[in-house]
Image (cartoon, rainbow, N blue to C red; front, side, top):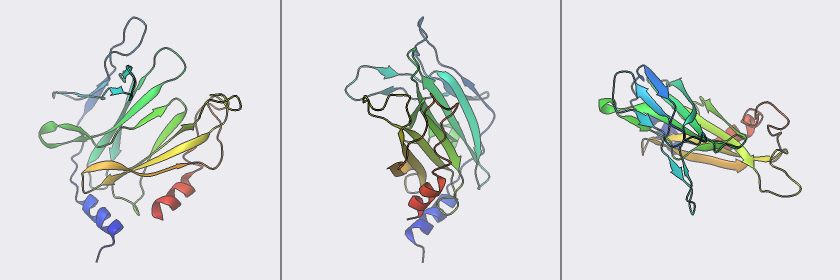
Length: 214
């Protein structure tokens, strides 16, 4: 008899995902000040429509974020033989701060392009990784980390921070990804003021895996 975790892995193994066909990415449009006005798109070669990264409007805010800048797409192979595309692009209003949206795109029935992720964002002080963790899921696992910073005289934006870590795992019941784990690191990590790239996820790997398996 399957345990609940084994049942999820068993169901995920039979979630049919096609191999993603050849594709291109296009940046979104910007206004005269370089502020995005449309989002980047992922297009399957010779097919329509393309997949645009969804815009985002923060609660109680009039600002709409269009993710137009630095579009990137990475093919993620699956154990089943299919593949997904990790698609991302950023919003920037002209300063040093940015917000990047992530999408994990499936090539579905009749060529539909479907984002399997909930709303997932990282700032310029964040990072992301795709893991293969067969004990948790036969589908890729998405891990993100971002600075957990509340402005204060003692901690500037570019000082070392505690970091929020989020882990997203495929849910076979819904056919989508869901947040499986969230925690705040117990130690502070350097920000981009002191290092060339954020490096939190790899040092936290053992803690993340332990929490996932608990």
